[in-house]
Length: 313
Image (tube, rainbow, N blue to C red; front, side, top):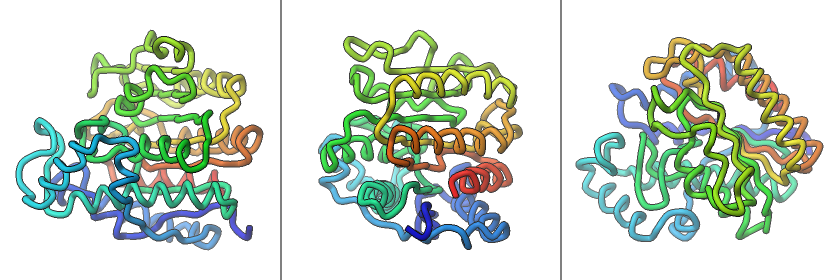
């Protein structure tokens, strides 16, 4: 393979947004893209195009009833998909299906041996549950990717790593009792930030106890604290030996995000990506798929995601 990394720098992904006045607006994509071009990173990666997930792919994770709920709301463009966090707009079904389908295309490119690694900037919508939207997330592309890897490629031992400021509750609770989904999440303490979950004692249920690692940190935790917690994830992954790694690298854990309280810098994101690349090379035939996740300070998004791309090259 000429390039080991494919980056989905397709501006149609920006259509998953809730308007210019909303924190999750279209400028999030373009802030990353402009910096990505400015740093010349596009010269060292391959260009991926967006793809639409099918209804059958979406319902690998989501209930059929919920799928129809999103379709109906997408047609009307009125109200909310949930109880007030996730607005409906005309075309939200297609926009969310595009995020999920692009992630699944990244899975295919990796599993078919065309690339070792992939990065999708608008992805990692980790709050949506199997039967409902939550926290700006219509479809949970992370959960869909996990189910897709299992059904199409029979990959059992999947690691999902999340460093978004918010706990990845939609992934965690969907697989809380699943011993084969390895879940590790560094996030702001749920006592102080949405969604109010992800406590250290939440390590999985039944056969899955010990396969989940929740690492809440206090407000204003910095890069030093990040590295302390990250060492736990690395030691745990060395023990668990995953076959495929999914990485949600939300930029809202950087300092000066308008809706969170952590003080990481983009260096933490680059460090995590470099370390995961090594672990993927060691245990998972290099297979590492990265999703941009949250982030509502445009400069932080540009910095963090470009650090991830640099680490993945």
